[in-house]
Length: 326
Image (cartoon, rainbow, N blue to C red; front, top):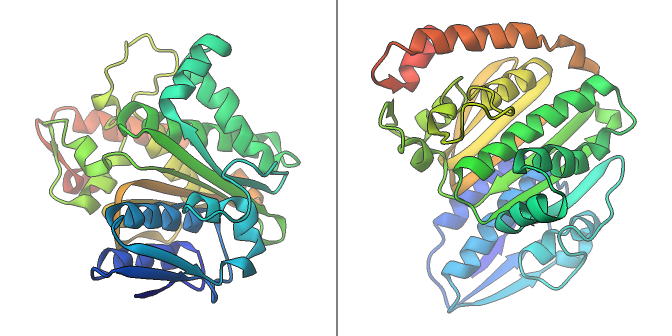
């Protein structure tokens, strides 16, 4: 059976591909055809590669072939093909990266705990900020401190949630800066249990479906309610991390989160959702350096505190309740 890969590895095409691959019938053999692939972006590469890996593992009795992979130098340099078990191009994390890109990189989460504690003598929170986030913000090394600090905060909060809640064995990330487009893209993915299953651990939350789970995950205080860490954790932010990150991106770019059968996108025009098929969680944050001045962190924090205070008195919390308060 022939599987035509998307002609563009962007957010929209990647999401569509997860659904189409999920619905493919059983066959003795499959051939992934990359001959028409053109534009390749970090989020698209992470999401599509994860879905392809899952597909191959689930159909390990079938034969898997590949066509047209040797025409996309960017994808091969970024480590895409090696990430889908094809011995072509650089391996994930092998390319050095630069002030415009970070290649597809895989981190073993359990191993990083050992590195942080025994080699770096850091807490895992410090390791995420000073080692992982620092690697990703290299792509804006020539830009303003304000942009670098903002990205560091957003990246750190997203990755902390992976470590604290996802139950994933691995963390994947990649990034690209297009100066001419005035756009920075950071993509972060885990293959854990997904947002919906994570939130269902909290009996106070009403999680009816995957899109409601995504909406809930971005509200202040929700992830804090899942945290078993001590109250004196200096990195604690009362569960405001994803709320702050999505609001920052809404002000100066866009934010997308994909988990289960839903993908939620947020920008200054509002929210939109699309159907997807992905068991873990994939996040894309985009910021425009020229719009970084639009971000008002004090205003975002105040809004978060207001929402969190109003919701405290409710015994059960749903996505609809949050939307009424907002």
